[in-house]
Picture 1: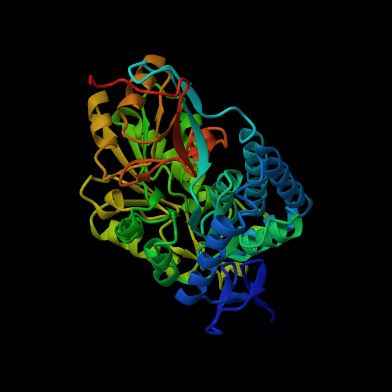
Picture 2 (picture 1 turned 60 degrees about the horizontal axis):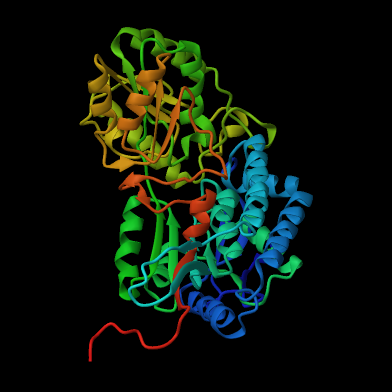
Length: 493
């Protein structure tokens, strides 16, 4: 089987050590591809290439915004040509149903097109200043940060990569990109597109390998001007500590344990459907998943019965055939999710449905878990406090609006949250009190390239997407001009 390679300084290369890693198809446990496995030395080569690209050759950095925008459109057009291939790669590598992978590719294509237009829009500002130092003119410009290292997770292999790559490239930075070692194949294909459209040598570099080695080097290395990471809070904290060496700019999108608050006056069927989407989309492997249902006591039993009916009807199978749910990403992650389910049982939660590995028919060798609902949960339970990152949802009840708000905010995370009610004033009142960066009213999970994405508390620092996502990869320079050169006259002789 051909070894999939890294892309460093404009060339496809194997790791210096010669090590490789097998990429597994989670639907059947079979080897999907063999990928080169880099380490610190490979990361340093990629960093050196990006540094030379930005500070010495400067080809991409000095390219005007119009030309950069045109290049992003070329990338989007090439992705569009291989849309079906990219979607199939993510389905085979990650396990998500094909229709979900197709939607991811479409979003990724739009993301490049969005930032292509955004960088051509006016930016910066002009300010009136006092004339204590003479006739002065002050304005700001936006400049690229420099060498940007980017580390992405496995749950949205292509899309999460594009969320970081598109704005960083649009801003004129040079990139060292490291995807999760579990899901690298669609990112490799994307870098083949970068090569095809003619991105300058060293401006985009792809390194492959374990986050514990390469990720730490990217965070510590003083030639890296910025690092962004999407993943667990624990790893994000370690990156923050490592990045302190040169006080590099940092962006973190971390874990979540997001509340889905449902009042008695909500449309029950609609709330059930959105709750399903909130927790079972992408097999629940979503940082913003609505994993904590907090529902008014009077309608809880009816809601849980309907949710269980719908969860039991979910189809599971070969993700290429578009079931409702595919397998979890790896065997080890499946076992982690199953361990959490057992903890929920041991700690006294009521298992309403699911809760086991699914092995029927063609799923026998894959990493499938039935969608799981726990009732009668309390704040002190592990399944309520910790991020599970799988198709597991907990149900708790409240009696008053303030109790609902307090329960929603009783978490160290603050990524997402939702409110379901037919009372518009209550909806706005409660959603403003929920300490989270991404919120919904009477829906769950829609996200848009045009709007910022990120969290409060231990869910991260900074924002992705929208104009905020571009500004993350820019520095702001203030320029002050003396329009009347000469003696300042600020002191008396």
